[in-house]
Length: 273
Image (tube, rainbow, N blue to C red):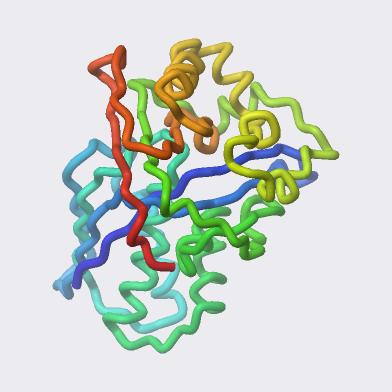
């Protein structure tokens, strides 16, 4: 059985405060975009994980897909399976690819083995795998608070815009990014800022990670500037980086990009919630 796990972008990201458990309270919007990893699961004699496409760092036995299978097996009598992942969502880019893979695997296993889990149960399993995993169960635009795992639906439709996403040849770890950010307990009223015309987001919708990341990696800040010069009505870094996206009214022609950068021209016009 095959499924396609999509990425997300962050629209605004406010780091409010560090919690006693070591995590941070956040405020951000998760918005799904059409960049996909491919997942296939077949029954097998033993559990096996295979990947292709982009090289996934670390021990494959620690991959979130395997963790999702093992977690679900603690509650359901699952047979052994072979999991094949073809990776195209950039890694270390703030796009949630690993979380998407885990969440979509939970949904695939639920369907494949007729487990009968509803949305709430799937989200509970997903939350145990990562703070943003549960977002991909419903996979609709949300205002995320808490540690990124408390969701409120938002009416946000970017389908009329061309989304251009650029992934520099830089990997930014989440831990490193948090080491550069200064929490602001009052935030910047993200929910109300999103009600403004998108052309005004430039002055009202912010990603708190940008200042620290841009200071360490000036090329990422320069990339955001390039998107604005190319006609973006709004541009920002996604998550803790390193990818940067722009919203355009017309499909742009970008010039001056480093040839080592990956560029995605995303047509979200027919993405169904």
